[in-house]
Image (cartoon, rainbow, N blue to C red; front, side, top):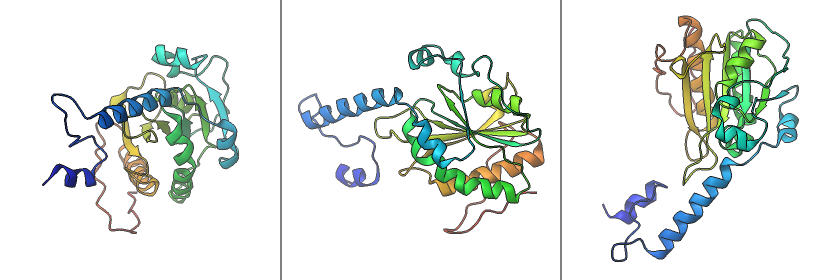
Length: 242
């Protein structure tokens, strides 16, 4: 297969050619532009009012990081709620956190469509779904603080993923059973690369519903919960565990 044929199937930088021992000028400049865009994306911010408009009843909170620079230099601050944050407890609920993470653009575009597919499925499965919590300057583990404050049985954190050279719009979901401060990443399940060029919001919602049902049955998430969701035919609805 020729390199130009392979490039039809991937956005990865393959078959760029060479001039002597160097890349062609066009490929080099394209790389520099993509790198600059990725660096800028790390500094992007959520449009919170726009999210509130499409997520009625959402509560807005902040992490302990006072600004973006602190957030990037002190990951620990992004993992916990700001002092004095109060959330009304809803024992046994399913909590949803929408967080900026390391790239806000994917969350901005994809959180609302995903929740539109997810929340009805959770309610059909008998969950009391708490109003979404929008968290700024947040990292994944802030869901533990939020889930603990709410008394949640599970929490799903929708968060912007680290931008790459070919994707500035990727969102991830982290699911944690019995969230509380001190949980670690081995106790979570992750669905990654949710974006137009990756996993669709419809498929991600179906996968999350399957994981939630399995976690409820087993009483855990993380390394003890394997993603063994059967492959679905196009348009087929997932079969949930009970």
